[in-house]
Length: 362
Image 1: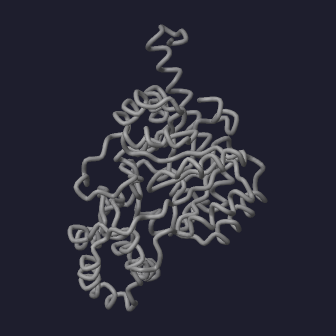
Image 2: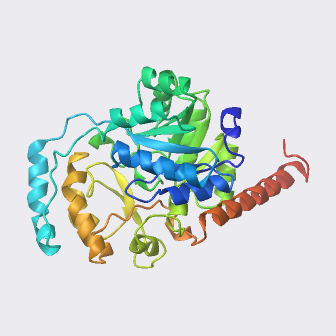
Image 3: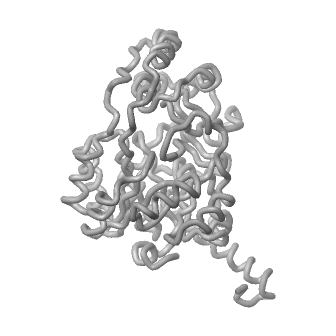
């Protein structure tokens, strides 16, 4: 790994920040204590809620950790398309005996207030999703002693991340579960995402800053492949979703390996932005008609998702998961980090023996 990352955590394993109550302080603490980099997800939280999570995490570990922020979203949704989608979801609201949410519930996710907290109370790492911050923001965090990471889904986005002054780029492949971190939501680009190994190679030839690889990684051997391709570390989300420390709903955890859910799908059905989840009834029925309108659709479906979870109906929930979900292991998070590290070491040893006749493999 690059020294900027090596100085923070010994193992090239980053726990992805999963918003919506999954990446809780207990999970981040367990990962950081085991030698990886645990992450809190500030997305969909208030600034005060984020600060409370940070305080809890600091009380549980002295190891470095990260906090992830969502970038504010521009206003470009077709209002009439959102209204049409709301009419389509009326049957869901009736079925779950709830009301649809207000699509105009905010577009900035409390971005400025959260930044103010992170500048007043600096944390070791801050990452960004759904766009790239300004140089002023990244410079201010750097002056506070915080290492910055920004998600990119193309080499062009990675170049923008480097130009803005971020320390690290997170190369997110199309295999990743949850929301794609594209800098601009372009419906015409749906389905054109790049596989992780191809993306790492393209980004590696475009930027000089370190790369963290994300997307479908579930085993130490896959981490080894990402490192061999040019990444400095790997970010895993779905792999940590099934751990007991994860705040994910029990139905969500069980669905990862449930044979009823055989594949994942990129969909706008739940949020209005492309996100990969387990194919279920809601995605099949509403995905083809969901407009490109984030976070409007996210707010619209919020009550539906909560009602489905309360009713124990996985067919109406957003079951975010990467393409490797069937490889999920129900291990404690710290033990999972240890297993991944052992698998990584074994893969590197095997590669060295194969390429160098038992030597260094250089």
